[in-house]
Image 1 (cartoon, rainbow, N blue to C red):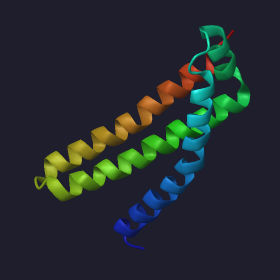
Image 2 (image 1 turned 120 degrees about the horizontal axis):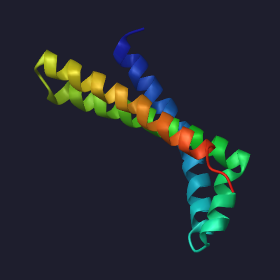
Image 3 (image 1 turned 180 degrees about the horizontal axis):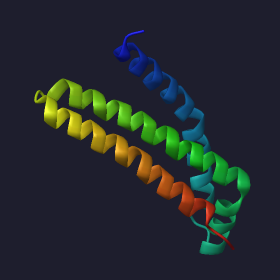
Image 4 (image 1 turned 90 degrees about the vertical axis):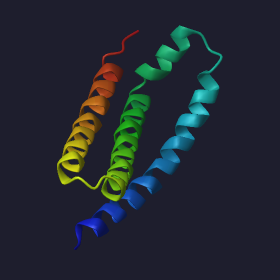
Length: 109
Protein backbone atom coordinates (compact mmCIF):
# COMPACT_ATOMS: atom_id res chain seq x y z
CA UNK A 1 0.00 0.00 0.00
CA UNK A 2 1.23 3.49 -0.82
CA UNK A 3 2.39 5.60 2.16
CA UNK A 4 -0.01 8.40 1.25
CA UNK A 5 -2.91 5.95 1.27
CA UNK A 6 -1.90 4.69 4.73
CA UNK A 7 -1.73 8.27 5.99
CA UNK A 8 -5.16 9.00 4.57
CA UNK A 9 -6.66 5.86 6.17
CA UNK A 10 -5.05 6.64 9.55
CA UNK A 11 -6.28 10.22 9.35
CA UNK A 12 -9.85 9.14 8.67
CA UNK A 13 -9.72 6.39 11.30
CA UNK A 14 -8.38 8.73 13.97
CA UNK A 15 -11.05 11.28 13.06
CA UNK A 16 -13.77 8.69 13.59
CA UNK A 17 -12.26 7.69 16.94
CA UNK A 18 -12.09 11.34 18.01
CA UNK A 19 -15.83 11.94 17.55
CA UNK A 20 -17.11 9.95 20.57
CA UNK A 21 -14.11 10.98 22.67
CA UNK A 22 -14.75 14.67 21.98
CA UNK A 23 -18.46 14.26 22.76
CA UNK A 24 -17.52 12.60 26.07
CA UNK A 25 -15.01 15.34 26.85
CA UNK A 26 -17.39 18.20 26.00
CA UNK A 27 -20.21 16.73 28.09
CA UNK A 28 -17.91 16.23 31.06
CA UNK A 29 -16.26 19.61 30.63
CA UNK A 30 -19.66 21.28 30.73
CA UNK A 31 -20.57 19.33 33.86
CA UNK A 32 -17.39 20.31 35.74
CA UNK A 33 -17.05 23.86 34.37
CA UNK A 34 -18.61 25.61 37.37
CA UNK A 35 -17.36 23.15 39.99
CA UNK A 36 -14.68 23.89 42.54
CA UNK A 37 -11.14 22.53 42.32
CA UNK A 38 -11.77 19.45 44.47
CA UNK A 39 -14.67 18.27 42.33
CA UNK A 40 -12.62 18.72 39.16
CA UNK A 41 -9.79 16.79 40.80
CA UNK A 42 -12.20 14.00 41.73
CA UNK A 43 -13.26 13.79 38.09
CA UNK A 44 -9.65 13.74 36.87
CA UNK A 45 -8.56 11.10 39.39
CA UNK A 46 -11.32 8.71 38.34
CA UNK A 47 -9.70 5.77 36.50
CA UNK A 48 -12.14 5.79 33.59
CA UNK A 49 -11.65 9.53 33.14
CA UNK A 50 -7.87 9.12 33.17
CA UNK A 51 -8.09 6.34 30.61
CA UNK A 52 -10.47 8.15 28.26
CA UNK A 53 -8.60 11.44 28.59
CA UNK A 54 -5.32 9.67 27.79
CA UNK A 55 -6.82 8.08 24.69
CA UNK A 56 -8.25 11.46 23.66
CA UNK A 57 -4.87 13.16 24.02
CA UNK A 58 -2.99 10.47 22.09
CA UNK A 59 -5.50 10.25 19.25
CA UNK A 60 -5.84 14.04 19.00
CA UNK A 61 -2.07 14.52 18.75
CA UNK A 62 -1.79 11.64 16.28
CA UNK A 63 -4.50 13.18 14.14
CA UNK A 64 -3.02 16.66 14.29
CA UNK A 65 0.50 15.37 13.52
CA UNK A 66 -0.81 13.58 10.42
CA UNK A 67 -2.68 16.68 9.31
CA UNK A 68 0.26 19.00 9.86
CA UNK A 69 2.67 16.64 8.10
CA UNK A 70 0.40 16.76 5.06
CA UNK A 71 0.64 20.55 5.13
CA UNK A 72 4.43 20.23 5.28
CA UNK A 73 4.34 17.90 2.26
CA UNK A 74 2.25 20.35 0.27
CA UNK A 75 3.88 23.66 1.13
CA UNK A 76 7.53 23.03 2.04
CA UNK A 77 9.56 22.30 -1.06
CA UNK A 78 13.05 22.06 0.44
CA UNK A 79 13.56 18.41 1.43
CA UNK A 80 15.92 19.16 4.33
CA UNK A 81 13.51 21.61 5.92
CA UNK A 82 10.58 19.28 5.29
CA UNK A 83 12.38 16.34 6.90
CA UNK A 84 13.44 18.43 9.90
CA UNK A 85 9.90 19.80 10.32
CA UNK A 86 8.41 16.30 10.16
CA UNK A 87 10.95 14.92 12.65
CA UNK A 88 10.36 17.80 15.05
CA UNK A 89 6.60 17.36 14.67
CA UNK A 90 6.83 13.63 15.40
CA UNK A 91 9.09 14.28 18.39
CA UNK A 92 6.66 16.77 19.92
CA UNK A 93 3.66 14.58 19.00
CA UNK A 94 5.19 11.90 21.23
CA UNK A 95 6.63 14.03 24.04
CA UNK A 96 3.66 16.35 24.71
CA UNK A 97 0.99 13.60 25.00
CA UNK A 98 3.37 11.48 27.07
CA UNK A 99 3.98 14.39 29.43
CA UNK A 100 0.23 15.12 29.65
CA UNK A 101 -0.60 11.48 30.38
CA UNK A 102 2.08 11.23 33.06
CA UNK A 103 0.77 14.41 34.69
CA UNK A 104 -2.81 13.11 34.52
CA UNK A 105 -1.91 9.78 36.11
CA UNK A 106 0.11 11.51 38.85
CA UNK A 107 -2.91 13.51 40.02
CA UNK A 108 -3.99 12.56 43.51
CA UNK A 109 -6.61 13.80 45.93
